Image (cartoon, rainbow over the protein chains, first blue to last red):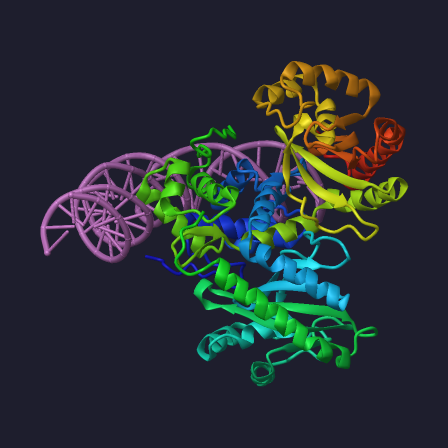
Amino acid sequence: MNETKTTDAEIEIAGTGTLGKAMAVLEAVVMAGSPQRFTDIVQAVGQPRGTVHRLLSHLVEEGLLIQGRDLSYEPGLRLLKLAHRSWSGNRFRDIAEPHLLRLHELTGETVHLGVLQETEIIYVDKVESRQAVRMSSQIGKASPAYCTGIGKAALSSLPQPELMRIAAKMKFHPFTAHTHRSAAGLLAEIDEIRRDGHAFDREEHEKEICCVAAPIFVPEHDLVAGVSVTGPAYRVNMAQLAAWAEVVRGTAGKIEEEVRMRLGPGRNGR
Amino acid sequence: MNETKTTDAEIEIAGTGTLGKAMAVLEAVVMAGSPQRFTDIVQAVGQPRGTVHRLLSHLVEEGLLIQGRDLSYEPGLRLLKLAHRSWSGNRFRDIAEPHLLRLHELTGETVHLGVLQETEIIYVDKVESRQAVRMSSQIGKASPAYCTGIGKAALSSLPQPELMRIAAKMKFHPFTAHTHRSAAGLLAEIDEIRRDGHAFDREEHEKEICCVAAPIFVPEHDLVAGVSVTGPAYRVNMAQLAAWAEVVRGTAGKIEEEVRMRLGPGRNGR
DNA sequence: AAACACAGTTCCACATAATGGAACCACTTC
DNA sequence: GAAGTGGTTCCATTATGTGGAACTGTGTTT
């Protein structure tokens, strides 16, 4: 009868029965970034000790976690293996890749591809050097949507009610002096972005880092994403970024179009 | 009781109650590399339709899978996000990184770092260009141990009974003309590797690709790994590889030592 | 248009598998 | 040696997951 075991400010509430709890435990360990002791984990997930202990041992057996000699828990390699497959088999990324390379060639600066996931954007690709696209250290990284070029661009393509729903969930952390501090400012900027078709990041997430971004929106596939060209402020001023806006929009448009074509609506997988 | 049985028909047997089954379903979708239909998945995991259906919807709710308009299932982004964190927080990789960079500088060729996981090795880092270490497309990739330099080097540091146990599980697929076709040949080579302290890959996994590798062995932390320098056969002949053997061994040794130091003694070994 | 096949979804009686409180170590610290 | 801390195990209870079967919706055949 106790449906809501809502325990204070913990990691996450289980919504998916056993799996949900297991994932909450996994997340607690992985997101911590350092080996976690049993008690830490119990604390983090707010679940009874017996339960957590069993979940942990199951996760270890599955190779998702490994337990060191000092009994602490760390991420296992199964996650990496799974992620590699899901990355290299990602059709969206695959389609976008040549376009990202071309954009990089035109600008000479770092190009990012990111997907909106509720309130944050997750980078799925990056072109940095003159070399072939590779999984870089940024891949899989999650950044807040409200202070990144790709994030704001992606948000701008959402229908208003959806935008409001997501905006309501945001926590505005002031990373720099230019970071939006409330939804109001963000929403005002989103209006502009809708008109212009592109978004800027004026050192809002990291000092000395700017970018121009354009949205990629394919609602048929629930895909809300964006491309961006990023550079250090000392090398890339606003005029330069503005000059790149058009080609960034063009790239986003081409990716969007090709995704629509190649992932066409009613198709049988394989 | 970990049964990593990869028969042609079914993916894996659940050993961890509900979580095991959920992971088997997840793996079936991710490893397929293309969107999977419900029936395909049922077939792959060999579980009743009702069960699979519920597991799938839970996995979707958790963001581990996404379901397209055509009802097919694909990997979701949660996996990427988790993998990013577990990669960037990996202490072993972190410690090895500068050594890999140095080794790359000395040789000018691609440097790999891989960890042995039962019968396969999983790449956890790679230095390819003159740039900083980044997560490349190889990260998380799993290759068979018996036909890769790192794999054979890692195997060579195992105690004999453990080696035999793992060797017994291998399936020898003939990738090239030089690939070991049976355990006998592999074990004979392992003896040599133990003497020499390094292993070669003479186009055994991919045509035209060779490497020298050395083992990194830290039993206190259940770490069986290796470093390698890889190059195309036309540029890197056996004499060149042999000349690099010493510096590769040296790198491996330094990493091993530093891991022992920085990750402390593994407590009173049990 | 009826009949059929096939993929996906829902239902529900049933038993297995998860639950979590409490007791139990092992090892420090006061 | 008593109290504290961190991890592990036990086990009665029942909530959870199970899976066969029935149902729906679509497309294809006759």
